[in-house]
Image 1: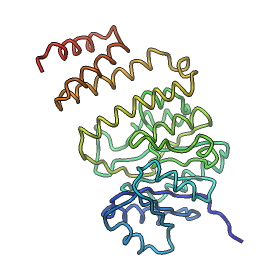
Image 2 (image 1 turned 90 degrees about the horizontal axis):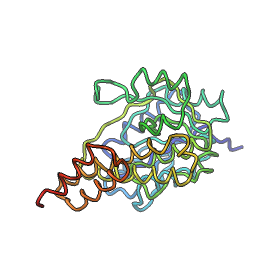
Image 3 (image 1 turned 45 degrees about the vertical axis):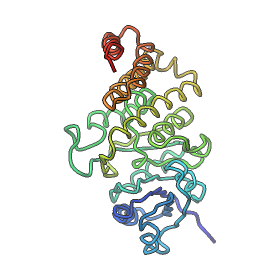
Length: 301
C-alpha cells in the first residue's frame, strides 16, 4: 500500500548549483522525516541537473523550460502527494526543527489554510536585528492572530517559513505566474481572505540575502507590489472597508514615489514624472510628493 507523506517540500531552482546542496541537506536532515522532496529545475544552464542526480532516490526531479519561480512552484504543487506543502527557496536553509514545528501546529489546527513563522538572517544582523520579524512584533502576532493589516502594512510572510494546506492552495489558484518577485505577498493575501492563517513565534529558517542588480530588482518589486495591491482590491472589494481607502492610497503612493526616485536616478525622466503624477493623484495633500513632482517637472532634462 502506497502511503502518502504528511508534507510535500517543493524547491524551485534556477542556476543555483553552487548553493543548492546546503539547502537540500538542510531539508533532508530534518528531525521530522514524513515528507517527500520535489525539486523543480526551471531551465537551469549550470550543473543543477548533474548535482541533483547525486541525490538519486532522495528526491523527485522535475525539469521545465524557464518560466519563472511561480510556474515552477505550481508545477511542483501539481506533483505533490501530501495534504501540506512547504515551499523552500533554493538558497536558504531550514533549521532542524522546521517541519516538526509547523506540522505540529497544523495537526492541532487542521482547518488552518496556512501557518508561518519567523526566520533569521544567514549572514548576520540586518536592520539592527538578527530576525526578519522583530521580536516584539513576532510575539504580538502569535498572541493576537494575523489580520489583513498585518500583511498589508509590512510584507511579513516568507513562504520558506510556512506550511500551506494543499486544499487551500488549489482553491485560491496557486501562485500567480505573471509575478516573479511579489508572488508570496499575492498568495498570502488570497489565502488570508479565504482561510484562517496563523503565526508561530519561532525561527524556523535562515534567509540568505542577495544584492544582485539592485536597480532592476527594486523597479520590478515596486511595480509588482502595486499590481498586487490593485489585484487585492479588485478581487476583494471589502478590503476598502477593512483597511480604508486612505491607507490603500498611501501605500500605493509611496511605492510610486520610490519608483520615481529610482527612475530619475537611472535617467528615466519621463517614466519618473509619470510615477510622480500617480503618487500625487493618490495623495494630493502630501507636500513631499507635490514638491518632488514640481522638482521633476522643472528640471531641464
